[in-house]
Image 1 (cartoon, one colour):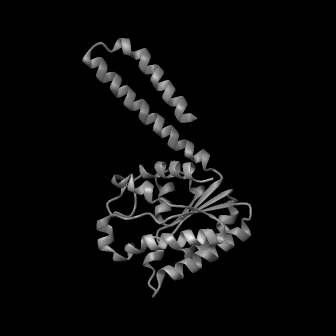
Image 2 (cartoon, one colour):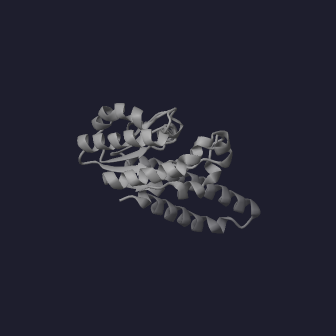
Image 3 (cartoon, helix red, strand yellow):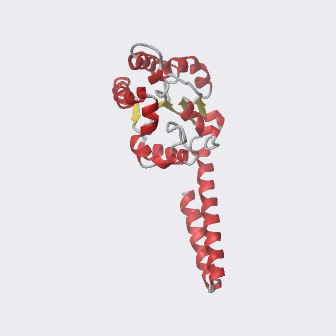
Length: 222
């Protein structure tokens, strides 16, 4: 709704300013004004996500942590940390419970895939299942959505071959979601449409990715 209001306001202002833009210089000034207002509208929409997700919590690794790092969401709505895994997240249950979220989004797996054990996927999924059971027990009224592990670039996969198991890991997450009767959201399509927003390491994302992530979540979750 906010986006529509801002867009209508911008269009109205453009119509008012058109008669004053008969010269090339006037046209350039109008274009600059439109770009500035569009940027303001984008900023307003991003800030509105803080309100829209104020009773939700994102639990996960450094990719999730960036939601608050880039000031897209408030810190109290984000429980992400570098090196976060399903095993480590088990220690964060009490903190999560204290925040009383209506909706919990879990974004884990990028680091679980790299866990130094014989079968990282089996080890991780076992702990992920425990994590879901704990959350469901202690927050019975909260909805839970598992977010898939985001793909990495070809160069990142070459540098770390274990990332080749992302697809297999996501399939296991989807099966786990069905078993535990929680929602599963595949982010692959979103990332593939925004490959220019990968950060330099080909694993993490630039700030511009995160409003798109939240919009995608809103459009594809119940």
